[in-house]
Image (tube, rainbow over all chains, first blue to last red; front, side):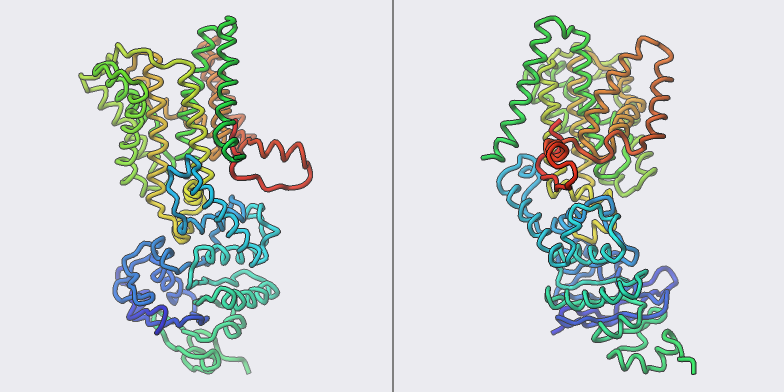
Length: 255
Length: 327
């Protein structure tokens, strides 16, 4: 059974149909790519899946449980987290705090306990810190623990954003153009990182990307969106050869 | 055991020693009633500033209605002690604070959807509504003010409550709940995507700030023994806002420092009469030009920071999150 099942997802903004009849099944452990020209509705799909927008029609089921109508923070607590097209870190906070904040939804101690510094709250604080440090070590950002997030090089900011999404305890991660603005070397590193993280944390990943080299190499399956409609779906090689996709997005090779 | 000492016993020792010194000075006649009064106002202003800093500085919501919450605390507690003759000042203080916090929730739930300037204007409107309402309630003296409030506030309880407020704010800010508030200031969309219930934490910060303002108002009322609505105008909100900004949005230590400096400064400038406001404003302009982030920015003065400076001047050490703002 699919981990995430999206059926007939439709979003209308007034007279404009941004996404229409979008279907998606994510199986556990998959890396699936969502591609398409600018304005095709890819980010809208992400916003629908993560609760930023409410769908006009359609269903979103995670493990058989409906996510429609939930707020973003509730969806995150169900085990789906995301990154943003234009990096949205907590810029003026340290790398450690960025990750610790993502741990918040797994905490149980009350505010009164925290203010009185009762043992349970203090123990939990220490656990949060330890867990965050461990995660940062895994993603090789442990040398930056005390650095303010905005001072990190671009590639590391992207990695931190992914680490932060991981810290929420998510099973499914949505990456919105993770390679945007990266140089070829950074893109290459990121490509390896995504695959590695998936194996390490047993994740399922859906990613939006324009860098075709990355998409074709990392993704096991692709969906192509154009004007809010899925025009093709399949393995990377099939997509590369698909006439409709070439016409709408990839473009003819110059001969 | 070490934690117990640091979190509970050390603050008590520091407080008792500090108060002992002040009491000694008073017995010796060095700390005359005028200086004592300035100290009391420093305490009250510190509580107000920290309360507003929780909302404006740590949570990033721009509130301009702090005097309104202060008024609620002042009037509710004063009504309890002066008219209903409630004997317990502590209870009156807490009820004053809770009344303000309750209004904070009532006002916060609808208005915290607004952002930036819009929220500022909504809260400004709220502050004025409170003042105008009080102005028309005969039961609390309307424009004449409320008289006959017992003098319950003294140096000891003001300093005690100020210390408690500092500790509560510090412990809150350094907990996962406090970080949730700060993340909203940093990036609300990202905070929500990372699992933070943003509405809840905005209302919590707002209510907590309002609670502190209510307590400060109650202390204020029971010190002057008389209150009237003109003490809680928009200008009072601005005064508190100036202290928050001067000290640094997002610094508890900054709030304390700014409350001390500006309270003393406005007393010193009393001597030059009309020129006072001009000098005061000019100083602020200079400060904002050269240090727009406020005196302390978002930094805190803490024992750990001091250790860091003295012990390892070159090596960066991660400050233990438990020791912030001991000042």
